[in-house]
Amino acid sequence: MATLLQIHDLKKSYGSRCLFDNAGFSIAEHDHVGCIGCNGAGKSTLLHIIAGTEHADGGEAICMPETKLGIVEQTDDFIEGESIIAYLERKSDKPEWKCAKLASRFMLKNELLHLPVTTISGGLQMRMKLATMLLQDPNLLLLDEPTNFLDLSTQLLLETFLQDFRGAWIIVSHDREFLERTCDKTMSVKHNTIKIFDGDVHTFLEEAAARLKEAKQYNKKIDTERKHLKEFVDRFRAKASKATQAQDRLKRLAKLHTIDIGASLKTAHIQIPSITEKKGTVLRLQDVSIGYPHRLVAAHIEAEFERGDRIAILGENGQGKSTFLKTLSSELPPLTGNVRWAHNLTIASFTQHVDCALDPHETAGAYLSRASGSLLQEDVLRMAGNFLFSIDDLAKPCHILSGGEKARLILAGILLEKPDVLLLDEPTNHLDMETTEAFGAALREWNGTVFFVSHSRTFVNLIATSIIEITAGKVTRYNGTYEEYVWLLRQRLGVSATHEEINRQLEIIQNPKTTRQERYQELKKKRNHATKLERQMEDDAKEKHQLLDEVLTNPNTFSLERNQRIATLETVIRHTEDEWLKLQDEIHEMELR
Image 1: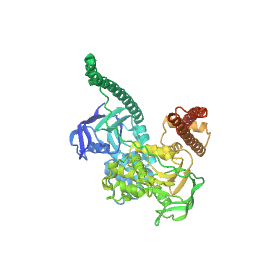
Image 2: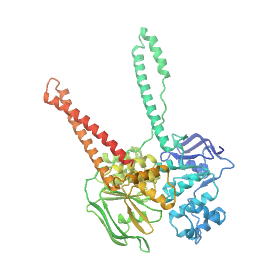
Image 3: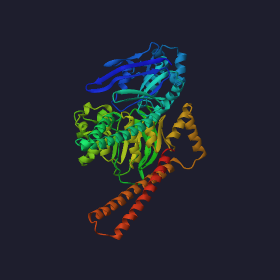
Image 4: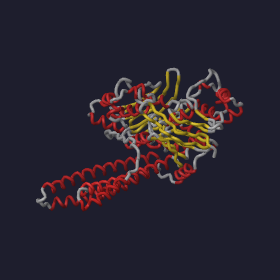
């Protein structure tokens, strides 16, 4: 295959922070590469260097003469009154029929093509920009976090287009599911290096975890051997009879080398404090209309939500998802009707524009302390650590934090408020893959209520128990699974499903054992039982240790009753562990349905 891009000895630093050092790789004409790495690793910078909008400190990025880059424009150069088809013709210099043919792949056709660009939704404008990029006949696409800006419908249309696209691409994304569906190679950006591996992101992460585990086990073995050799040398070096053996072990010691696994990256491990368990309705909407004084967004909304629900709010960009959340948070009053929350609730909101919530001169630590109210400093530091903030990080003023750091800081502050309800508008836009998935896992285990908007399919799949769709002025409750909703959306768009999705739908049709709500209640029951078993094991283990301490403290005092109790506790703990492990397998199986 012909090479489209060659990277040689690439170097790039910002101050004392080195992103790349002597990095090199190549992209061939049919490579489909998903680029992953933690926030700040340099993924977006790499794309900017390839595109020529940013300079490297050393080395070079060489696009071959036949390479034509495809980049989605971030700036708008719309002309007042210009239609979609006229915009496509102007930007691509292609005839109308060709523009219309490609635009139809993104469901821009018929009367839509003649609508003024400035009047259409942000979702349709993004589809138009994608069509504009592809009309320029690129053979290497550079897509930087596309899922942050593409609604689900446009993601599905883009995925389908990429299946037929004959060129190559590099996609930077923190959405594992999107990468798995579009890329068969994985680019890892970390430790100042860039490496490309054959295999999708799932395979790469599994193999990387296995390699790391093996390396750690090998290093542990080497460290143990070093310790034993050093102990022998230190003990017998001065003895003439053992001098030869000591020298031999010194030579062996010099030959022992551990595997360099690089500086360990911090990963998020998020725990959200549970709230007081309550049953019943948390929110009731009665004939609610939402919007603005001169623009109605949606009308006649009737819905009830239970405590503990995790509601994904979906729909195309510009249809009113954020408006709906703002109405729930009382930032916007409803145009008509009643929004009735249960009494004595603490409701916390996260908005897309994180900068607005922070004082640029306040330190990260001061912000968290202020958000925590009367909580202990220990609780503040624990939550900061959950979101990857070190003691040094907490001393930084907010204005020097990156977008990802600001998002993590605000999420940490919100959770310190110990809310009953979370309203989250695109909380994962600035989070890396590991933090996104850790946050999703934490929300899935939390017993509070969540209403959220997200374009990350991985995040929605992790936590949603129910779905609201906002489209064409209507708010509709959808009680199926997220996968079932995606299937339905594919049918609407005329987009073909994968074989895996078809098989899952056939299984659902042939085995309609339980409804989504019943499955959720069963899963919730199993999780609660698992939590009770964990507490029981902790209590039994604590009692056992106390009794063993008594034995150690008074070894000459024999107590048959105490010994029998220790034996009983050991048996109970063993059986409880077996039950807990079996329950965990059942929970894992249900989560994969």
